[in-house]
Amino acid sequence: MFSERGPSLRELAVQALSSVERGYDLLAPKFDHTPFRTPDRVLDATADALRPFGPFGQGLDVCCGTGAGMRVLGPLCEGRTTGVDFSSGMLAQARQAHPDAAWVRADVRDLPFGEAFDLAVTFGALGHLLPGDRPALFAGVYRALRPGRLFAFPVGAPPPVASRLYWALLGFDAVMRVRNAVWRPPFVMYYRTCPLHALRRDLAAAGFDVTTAPLTALGVREDGSPRGRLVLARRPGSRD
Ligand SMILES: C[S@@+](CC[C@H](N)C(=O)[O-])C[C@H]1O[C@@H](n2cnc3c(N)ncnc32)[C@H](O)[C@@H]1O
Image (cartoon, rainbow, N blue to C red; front, side, top):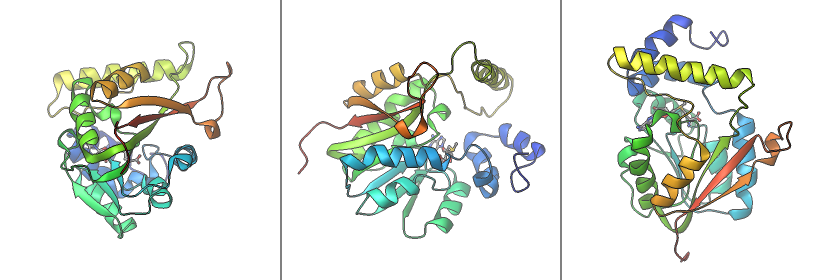
């Protein structure tokens, strides 16, 4: 549908009628040829914004998919990099592309790590978690980080109400709510459930000190505001 190497409309429909985990298992071989993979320009803008805080030791990519985040973690982390995801299909692709990294199969609402990482990132996955699941995710990332270390992820500026994108995302979420009301298993993917203020609130509730930085490489909107920001959530404590 997106390119000759991407999934067909039929394959996407079958994916969308599955659970999130099974849907990504099915999509995995073609995922890198869809727009759902985080584009390199977003990854590179994130790496540019994080560089002044580094270098880092061990890195963790939460909801790693096929391993897009390794483009950020690889150059910034001097220690081992790890990706975690619950789709074994996505992890198989990631393992093939980045055999030197560690790949862990787990639900990110119950992360199995303790004070092991110096930088955690996540790309393109928060819409797969219901707002009520965020406390468990953020608590798990907090536990996974060493004191004083960072959890970072990019967020796009919300589209203006007058834009086509605003209505397209509203429409997508509405269709998804209807789909999930009438079909099992649910496929959780909503675009409008993660506004920056709610993410900041939930990160602060998990114990993080939260700031944001503009992703200048992504440019600015007509009103001069940045198109994207990097959320920087630091686990308090002194770095040993
Ligand atoms: C849109 S993909 C993003 C992949 C990659 N981070 C990227 O930017 O290209 C979302 C990923 O989140 C994973 N995911 C969604 N919910 C999850 C959960 N509760 N636990 C673990 N992985 C999850 C999916 O399996 C999928 O690989």
